[in-house]
Image (cartoon, rainbow, N blue to C red; front, side, top):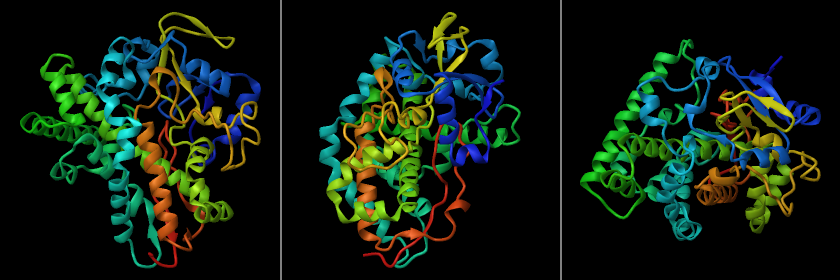
Length: 404
């Protein structure tokens, strides 16, 4: 029987289940809340291999009727209009589309923007109550990544102010029979209208930025309208909510371990290695998106039918004791640390350098400027988001002595 990947207990702490699955074998039949069944890859070596397996494609056209009948994919017409982005493309189209984005997320460019990112983080902390309590998701983590993203991709401030955070959650699947499906579809239409406004603005006010680059690629015939809209969709959604989740997940980890929080606060030189360890220890990208074989194939000893979905558990891979010594312990001096939090292979996250910079600046700013940072209330009462592929919390009540 497929292993269920849902429920409060699982979302709160999936690691005991991942450990059990890793010990049995690398590939398992699993079931998601929508009823869709998939094949879950666990263990570091198996995950690394699957992420680099050229037989596994990402385009949804590869999915079979059995997957499509229950998969919580977007309804039409939005699926055809917003889902032909990088995550759902295979070479050579994927290579062509990815090339358009790389220079804008290059490490040297992100490094040059760091002072501006710090200003944005400080502005948000300045707006917090002078003394606790406060919600660090509502007051900081929900806003910082999008403000940074707007700077990086060239989103005009007037349009950035009109972005609704709930649009970023449309990647959390809502099944066709779910009572919340009409509201979900309304959010999709709202986001689609916003994307139309963004592309129209960039067409009228072209500049040297990523959004203008994508619009020009559409004008030059390199991208179709659907591909343009989908890439803007991916930037707006993948550039915000996962980083919001990663900030909240890292803070949950640190606040549960006051001695580690103090160690990091007292020695900021640890930040680069600490961020890598926090990404390994509990990643906001818990599972990858769908992959498919074009024909019946064997994967680590398991026969997978063509068009069945294959999912890689990044979190299970990152806690594999066969790859990481004391894998369930948080060690800021861990080296090397070849975690898979950003994936691997051709679909390695193009925004990894940006996400790393955001996490470093967010943690440095919060730990430095909020002395005495601690939970306000019972941490076990904090609910984890029920998203299928992601980890994070929607609310993080804390208290602190003062804003310094």
